[in-house]
Length: 129
Ligand SMILES: [Zn+2]
Image (cartoon, rainbow, N blue to C red):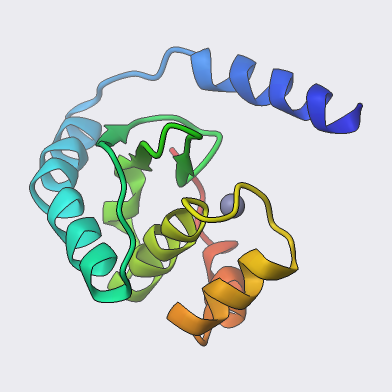
């Protein structure tokens, strides 16, 4: 039941209107130019295949992956160092195979991103805007 509650909260936050400031517009431009290509590169490198990739702007997640194998990436990723950006994308790519954060998911993430634990800690220093 707690899982269901969390999803409701996440959706409510995701619907909050976010202003398209000049800074956000610039991040969106950069994100569209860079992220789809980099995701395709990482997917090819590690043998993942997904359906579509979309660039999103929300304050609830850096990225997400749906059961339909669509990946959403937050334009805020452009504010991160390259290795943290790659970490988020690899994390979402691993969800194509495991839609949870279980043991198998972490073993797969470990195999494609050996320093994922340290990167996850570093990511906490950054806020979504
Ligand atoms: Zn995840």
